[in-house]
Length: 455
Image (cartoon, rainbow, N blue to C red; front, side, top):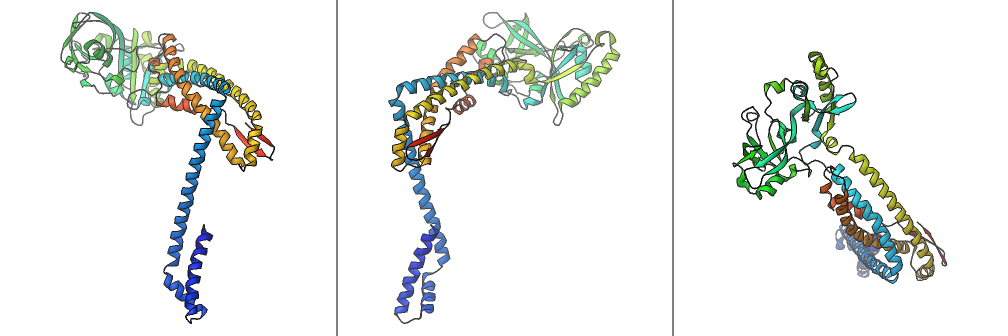
């Protein structure tokens, strides 16, 4: 391009210089006059080069997309002309990709999807550590051992229990939770309607208020926002509905459906036995689990000295809220994902063998292409396009299989797998599925008579 522009501009200057020479100027004066007449030759040169490069780029782009369209069309024709090969390849890959996508959707829903709270990695669960095992916390150890921890901006104690709900529709037994006022501060998610209970209401005699989950509000009250302010009866006692939590707070299908204040009495606060509380806390900005654990250890040492009868072997342990929720299910699910991953590798190996056999049968076709002028890169691109088309067709079939597999997996899974019901073909799973592709096939051409393929 640069040589073309230089030659063209030189031609114009030379023609003008000859014209001036014919009028009687000497050669040097004629050239100077021609250049002066032409104007800013350097600017014109740069402009012409830029236009030329743009022209070449446009031509190359047009040619590339034209050839790509031809490659895709030819690849589709090749697959249609070989229905047996296409059916076997698509079914094999769809089974491998679909099974992997279905299991990955479960892994993502249970293990990888973050909790729907602000900074969920700062939420921790605190356990009493007794003889090598985690256990629930007593009210006295929560008051004297957990609440004083300065690394926590908020802490809460939760007791899960059943409630008989009456006062609106048929009586129903539901799962709920009694929680201290810091509960909603720890999870830092405001109410959708109304408000959450305060520390003033977390007192004996003032605890007759209730916050409803979005799931219960939708199922029992038809998503009517005017339920805030009404009165329900829980276990025969009247409770005022003060708030409704958003749908994001229903992060598992087994989670509680309402919350009432814990309202510890003075006697319960002083009890260091009766370990029945689940404890959660939120780390302060800049605080770490190690800092919280260090403070809890110091508090445990003090409690062992102050209450040797109840806390002689007391210790505390800290894990993240996500670890507390999923338990040991990550190990099980990753094992299952690894197993179906090997199934996918076997499927890809089988397809590689099919492509090898099919490539050997197409040696004559590739020889003709080479004889007609197709270069090595052009043949490689054609073969690679065929593999990509096959991969996309297989992935589309795998999506349908994965959708069925997810429903089957949720149906047959044992009870208690957290968040498994949220498994679906969301964008993350779709991206994972489309990344599962057919084995890459390249072709390197040597000589006019025989192609050598590498896989």
